[in-house]
Image (cartoon, rainbow, N blue to C red; front, side, top):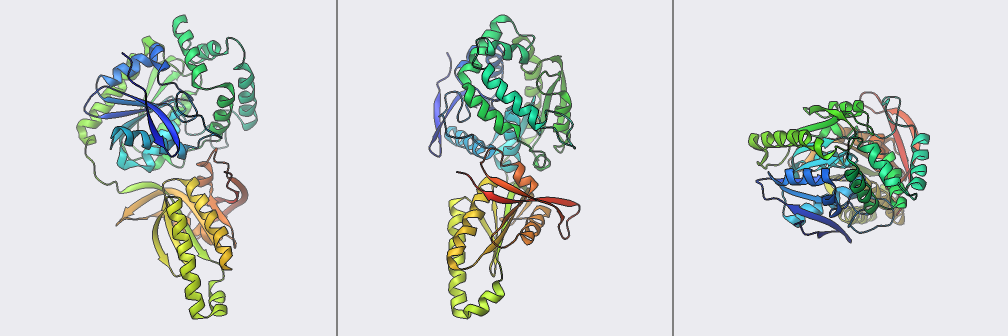
Length: 451
């Protein structure tokens, strides 16, 4: 019998999930582009994988918001929001720590989750994934932006035509039987409508998690087929090279989606890797000493002159109001206050979009007090020190803030790359040198936070 579909609440959105197996450890399967938790059992390769994974673990798989049996939503979910959904599913099933398997498009979010929440992940497997979608001067694979947009629009219209699902299935799984092709085509149709697929494609197009990958500290396995028809094998190699200590296995065969008869070698590698990681102490908890975080620095512009203008008593009142406003916004956007020195604040967040929105709310709010602040943000690997964070990423964040003008929220390119699909707008401020930090850094001013 197929398992029961249940729902976890992530904010006001219901996320569909299923649980199978009762092994000694948990695995969360993060699906590709779109999925359907119930129809997956009608797809031979998915059924084979889920049964195999459930034979040695407790397997948890879910539909991302906006797809499959999860709630439809307005707009396109960001990687940050999807991480919240994954965590909500884990909480719903009582999973404190899990191995995460990211499949294809699910790899970017899985990698980001492992870097951001290492206390909840003890192993990571990435299959058929990539660190970035678009070609760039330092990334010679994938389409240009114009090519990607054209392909996305064309796919929208093709998706409305008869036989489109079968054509996509044959492209992704060239060794599948006709029965498998029909099952995959049905799975695709029920997973996302043509319009939803277009919206997801536009968001995925701008994903770039390269700067986050070095922060992954859990045992990681990267799997890629040597003749992957959708994601070049060079992109799998690049993905593995960017993750410290990652194990990379190149599998023979053609296609992005294995045929049912080809699932065995993929699952053999997964089981072997996870069993070894678990036996080596994957079950042990403990607080990780490094984590991917977004740091925010703010300070009042012209504070000395303002203090002289107001006098000591009124300045103290204004500072108290300033501190109260910032602390309310930190609570609202799930930020953690780390330090306060005079008129400056230092805080950290587990999501860059929340951090940007918090900074913008602070910048707008303090104007009612007759002052302006400058704010700077950076996302990077931070050391955890006595419930605070430190390291080069913190220094970079402070230097970015120092470059901001009055009333400006300035971010590093790393932050900008990680908020794809958030609706946040940016203005390129060009490259600059940050005092005490090697190299040039491209900075961007926030010009609107969307909804």
